[in-house]
Amino acid sequence: MGSCRCRTSLRTMWLVGVALLLAGCAPAGPQAGASASTPSATPTAAATPTEESAMVPRELLEQLTADVVTRSGVDAAAVRVVSAQTKTFPDGSLGCPQPGQQYTQALVDGYQVVLEAQGRSYDYRASQRGGFRLCEPGVRRRP
Image (cartoon, rainbow, N blue to C red; front, side, top):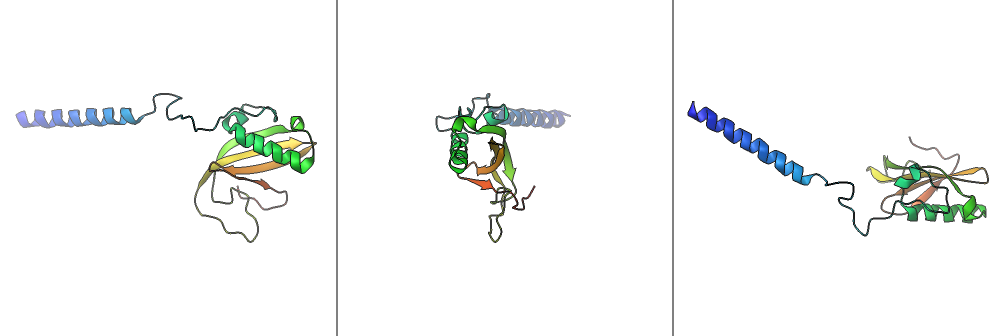
């Protein structure tokens, strides 16, 4: 009977040790892992801020707004955020494949941002690593 108690105690100690180890790996709170190099998630003043756009880095929204201004000739204040969300794309096409192009076959974390200016929508896709592309109307898109 004595060896049975010893095994139970060792098993209990092992489980407690594993639980403590796992608890030490968990983030301490919303600021855990944040660093000075993490991009700001504050929406740009040029695009109308929304709750959704708070998840997209401000710098990216500014780049996309500037691209819309270049394409449409409107003032940055006239650009509105229709939707902005984080997304995991099925491959390197960012859900917007171009005919004749080949893409990496790996999941890509990024963003889908739809902006509007003068009644026209601009559907942008971007990876978290940088760079963006405009999904042109009429191009077959993957879900």
